[in-house]
Length: 317
Image (cartoon, rainbow, N blue to C red; front, side):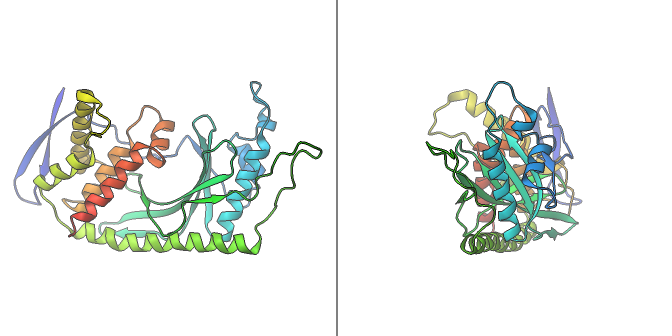
């Protein structure tokens, strides 16, 4: 069924109809609601694992041998890393059948755009590898009005080695000793990395204000969404991919008008509104909450949002 919606040129002026199919269901839940669990720094790493149902020596998954030692080391590292940078641990969880372990902490670099458009700042640590030795680092902002997420690039290295991860040995004791806290060098590296993330978010706040001040029209909106959601021509996936890209583009144009938060002053017919609508749409691509969050942080939807940010900033030139 086709539905017509109207994209306002500006307050009090004429309207141009756009047509789209299958309007999106809007949700006010956090992107990781139902996947992650809220925690705080008063909990031990073992208690965090237990709360997230990742302490397998406790929950006793029958189909596999207990491996909670690696999970414990990973969460202990997360907690120590956040503490070094004075970041407040907020949520922990897993994705893809516990193949990915992750933790979020608040950075307290929040900012607000015109119309009470609030952005909250986070650091994400994630282990996507079987040996749990490499930890990925992302900095991001979460828009409260619609819970869309944007990754913020920084000068910091994108990964860090899990110095708490023990090594198996062929003789007793089979595990090497485990580090319980950061040495001075590691502590300083963590502080420096998180500080670079804070600085990157502070810089992004200024760019976001400029995007909110940049007004756009219907032609710019159509061209922008067409570029953001264009199919990957290098993959040569044929007409089905083109049709899906066209549908997603139309969904994004509808989101530009009607998604949560688009009525705020910062987003109305602005480059910021285009970016937030594109991010909102990309965050909702996927069949399950797990796949949507995973793709939004690490997969193709993360690439879409990166392109959306780059194209939005190009509108400032």
